[in-house]
Length: 525
View: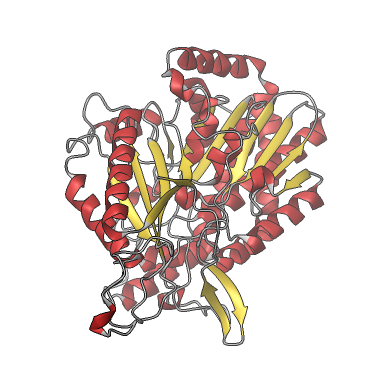
């Protein structure tokens, strides 16, 4: 196997872009903005793409930190995307060898799974594809999507619902990982998320007016349990009912996060409002609907007990992935020619310093062996299946799956360095710290960009490959659950951009976090 001259040229362009995009990546990594709050990150992407000659729609899908960029006319439409959201709750100030950005709050978010590298690798691939096609005169259209809020699987379901993927001929999905591989048959599951808001109304008293002969002041009167009690009961009730939602098989999960807080102080006033987000993932739509039904039932009962009103606001509803062997085979062939990322002496020295700070002796080879491996999609599939029941066809969750119902889609990965001493704990600070070191992370996204560009160019050069991928896509759609043929969110879906996702603000006290407010809580239950 060899790359065509145009594929080789596309790969070379990514390498030429590395010095510039290395700094770009470092900036995105330092911004560390969380879901639907990626204001500075999206500005950098939009400006760079326009500078390159892309037409860019800002705020696509009604999301201020999303975009849709396009270049070219004629030929196949090839989609790729950037993610640039970070993970709230990770303290960058605990990372050694890095001076925190001035004014950064101690509990800033971080890129636990290298979304910064994901986005920059995709950007490199998009620019290289555009330049290679432009130089050669080969027809093709590059569509590049800015996808915020992946940590809540937020934007791709919205873009899909509003028709942004309808004209794509193929899509390439990329993510940093602990080794270089691609998905084969097993893809990602359904992921649904909703926010329940409990409000204490003013017009419905908890009890009738007390006998005034008791001479009680307002501070001594009984009042509604209120929103804090509702939140507490919702958590406990869901914990009680969780084990009876579905049998303990299929790797389904249910998680919760508290969003809004009460607006009352510790007076004898019923706390007015609380919000809790539930997110659940499973391999079957029936499981998703079962969990939803129990959550709604719990919320209604809790609201009645606590004299609150409850509403449900959807965050996202994704579909499972649809595999495509033809496109996956072509991409992995290209990745095999390019090889796994290589990490040099500077990355090793940094890793040795991290090892010493943990109390270990420095290693000659500090990274896990998988970092240097190419693992075939079939091997990855076999490993994933080994932990699944025979009936299960998907696992985990990621919203890239939305692309796969609109066009042939491949999901692939390139390795980022992981310390042997810490193993595959992706969320441990030593591994996260290397996401911000150019010598450790640049080889990862550079190889990702090269793989994207060589595969996109191949799709433009080889109509037989595109035809085979499309034929398989249509065949798989033809035998799929009909409920997945259209997006699960409605076309007029209102993205939950104003819910209290954390964001940075500048105050008189410096650079801090705040929680925005909203007056739309969704459907009253």
